[in-house]
Image (cartoon, rainbow, N blue to C red):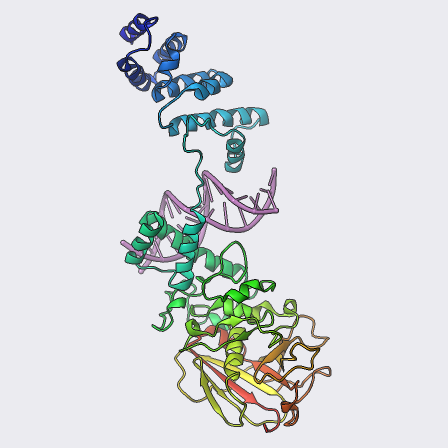
Length: 482
DNA sequence: GCTAATGATTGGCT
DNA sequence: AGCCAATCATTAGC
């Protein structure tokens, strides 16, 4: 120490110091930084030296000197010192010290002993470190947008549970580490679940039976790569800041529909394509046929020009119907577009079975969900009190005088006095149409623009089990179908 | 300044 | 190792 001070004094006035002197000063500072009795005179000598500008280009010298100044409450001097030093490549430690100094100033000003993380952040924003300390500037902690988009696309389009090989590939493609990719997907899954749980207003007891909330991801059919990881891994259609997944057609992004609050309880069934489920109750849209079975092959949602405007007023819809019933309904509607209603006709499509039955009032759609893929046949009408909602065939675009779109329905809210929505406790049989309801469908009416239909929902069960086994029993109970 | 989103960490569990 | 919940620190958007 003393020999260094002598060396320092001997070097003054003779031009720039030797690099060795600067290096020695830095090493000494680092070695003595925890010894106040020695570091104080060292710092005084360094700062009093005519060579201080050179010495302070050493990161350790600058660090220790500024720290000592800060400890002596000479914050302004410490900051000026940090602003003046030219450490090659910058220094994280110096930036940290810069921040610490400003934290102390803020604490002093506010009269507090500590700062919250947010207060520290604001302090850093207001007092960015000098460029000489961080030449590259402050980097955003968040991943670049393109990176997040890529990860999100993978999560929504392929799997939210990528294999190790997939994660490594994504890591190389995004310049992230494998651990970062892993964390991203873990957070993604977790937050998608949280999103669903938050949007879930009422527990569905029946739906929860037999499927633990933390159960493993339901196996996905090989033909359904899109949905593999379950209830939480699909993006909302238009909610939040998340980008839309690839399932959504470009057209849908242009629609001004309000995102419907989701209230899903798949309860172990993780195969439900939530976006479709929620969207199915939103606005005018039709489903176009898609190949194969299962949600991944669901028809592409596209806005129908007045066709099938589900949910005349979506805000009246009970969010608990957003899925999966509504989604099944959508499937029903989608599939029903493919057929003409024929009494007794069995229709297969999209993994669902439909049967058209003769009746004399309205269309009753009963949905029963099975846990196994449905072969043919029909699900027994659900027991208990089904919830009911009403469907009307789409009125189209011209003030209700629409073209007939066979199988295209409009979900309407029930007339008053039903306050909330359409979930009335009704007997398993057909719910009588309200007075303002358009009423039963006659054979002749079915060939007219606005046949009415009524849908009965099972209580709970449909939302509990796998979509794959869902059967829809579409009972066409209105008149004979000419 | 507030709030929600985001990335990371920790500890427990299988 | 992989997943989870809880939590923290940071950040963007308003």
